[in-house]
Image (cartoon, rainbow over all chains, first blue to last red; front, side, top):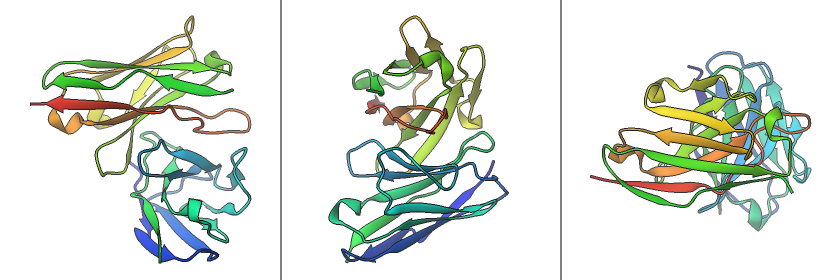
Length: 107
Length: 119
């Protein structure tokens, strides 16, 4: 199975900050990498697919980069509604594993 | 609008089965893979299985092979997931998710179905 390692597991940031979350795959997944946001008590929400494509309706403050084994989710100008947990997922080979999650907390 | 609506919460005894449904609307259901993902309390997301658009091929994560069955009914645009021989560690929220198509991937998600297993 392909393992995804997210870092950091948590981070503290302030409103207006930009943050980067990384996701490293144990083997290459081409660009078959998605990012999700989850808030407490809610279903995950898709942000990015194909490593760099923004899901419809998602603000452009979210961006994804990377290919192969190393990927990054960048959130610019953090707003209160952006404090949440973020997950990456590979869908190159089943099982379509998720990273362990990164919680973005308010500083 | 494109949406997935899941069946309600379940409380089951260990050793019994549970079947969760997920009704799709607003898109061409037979054109998409459908996936199931679960989340145990306080834990991360775990991909469980997927079923192909025609419903004749399913793929399961190794830990669920033989105990989970995913099916779909095109006539009602509904996908089902049955978990047999429930254990306390199956207590989780179960989500259905639409697979990839033109312009989107793993979107939308159902609202989730909470399954509680009592021993």
